[in-house]
Structure formats: C-alpha cells, structure tokens
Length: 327
Image (tube, rainbow, N blue to C red; front, side):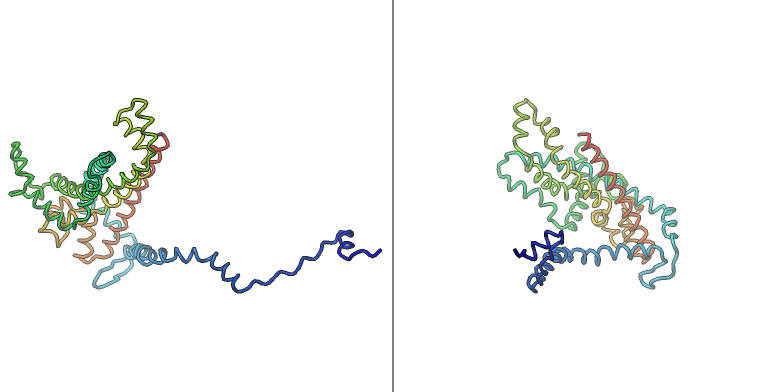
C-alpha cells in the first residue's frame, strides 16, 4: 500500500512546510498605514502649534535671559546668570513679587469660595434659571478695559461711589490709588467681579453630574442642606475644584491688565502707582522689556515667574491630593 508523502513526513516527525505567504495588495498596505499613522497625523497639528508658539518661545526666552540683550541693539554678549543674580538683589522685583502674592490671595481665595456658593444657589430650582446662569457670565464677557475704567471711577478719591457710601457710615475718604492695601482691595474686587461667575458655571456643571440618589439618601437620614453640601457636593466635585484652583493660580500670578488699567496716569510706564504700590511681576516685566528695552533682564523675570507659578501649582495639587486621600 502506498503512503501519501505528507503522512509519511508526519510519521517521521518532519515539520510540514507552510504554504507561501500571500503578497498584500496595495489596498491592504494603505489600510495598515492608515491604521498605524492616522492617529499621529490627527494630533500632529497641536504639537506643531505648541512647538512654534509655546516651546520655542520658552526656550528662546531662557537663552535670552543668559545674555545682555537689548530690544533695539540685539545680543550684547553672554552673561550667564548675571541677570538672575541682579534680579535677586533688586528691591523693585521683591516689591512686585509681594504685590503679586497679595493681589493673588485677596482675589483668588474669596473668588473661589464665592463661586462655590453661587453655584450652589444656581443648582437649586430657581425660576428663570437660564437667565441667572447667563447673567453670572456677563462680567466675563465685558471688555476688561471697560471694567477697569468703571472700577477706577467707582474707587475714585474725590467723586467715587465707594467713598460716598463709606461717608454715610462716617468713614473718611480713602485714596484707593495711592495706598497699598486700599489699591490691592480695589483691584482684587475688580478681578473677583470678572471671574466669580465664570468659575461658578464650572462648579455648576460639576454639581449637576453628582448622582441625585446620594442627596436623597442624605435627606432621608435627616442631613441638613449645609451638611449635604460639605459632605456630598464638595467631595464629589473635588477634581473640578482642583482644576479651578490651578487655573486661578496661573491667572492670579500673571495679573497684568487690571492693575495696569487701574492707574490711568501710569498706564504707559507700568509702574503701578507713584510708589509702585500695586505693580505686579508682569507689570515689572513690561516696564523692563518694553519701556527700558532690556530684553535679557525681562526674560529673567519671565523665567522666575514661570518657576514660581510651577511651584505654587505643584503645591496646590499636592495639598488637594492629600486632602482627597484623607477624605
């Protein structure tokens, strides 16, 4: 009896020869290339734009900060860390840093708490909810130049409405533009008025995603609204709160337009008052870079500000994570 060659090879333990691989058609090759590289092509525009307008200016600013660099005359030579050493001994820099931190704390902390309370009110069954929700965003839509102009008049020394109201309770007129703490309070109120509604809508969107059965269970257990808010609502929207804290930190440390326009007489110079009583770091950067044309020194200010924002953001993130883990 004759045995088939395949069976004979199998009986001898020989591995059968696989059939030859079929060649892919050009359509199959294009399909594989499309599957592999199309996702990278979709996200490539972001990285291209970020590289041109984000990463390159950041690295170039770091390079300029290591040189004696004038906006008009250009590079005057490599100086290493001299700009940073001079910055640390510059009393105007420390004054601007103190003003920046003060304005940041006075405007951001009350603003976020006010936004949280406002969002809680908007989350309740109010009549005309769409009107109120659109209304809280109105201050953010108005031009910041118009806002600064109005607030500069409200806090005027001689004819300001705020001083007029203070006069009814026996308080002497306050020179809001000349005194340090008074100017900080006035500018902070401007920032709070612009951004409280914006953050409130962000909190409101997060609150509406909290499961309703959690509230119903708490109400059945006899919890008050205050208890429900701090025990259920706030922990549930903690990631959103962390987001607003970090974004507000970045914006607060970069405060420029509001204090710049609050002093009409110093708008062109960026000194922040006659005694620099409300000059922020960005205003000092503007003064050095665009009034005195010292690009190297202003680039050093920019990098110090970047590092400060990074440190504060990391601290905020770490504290929030620890609070979340304990909760």
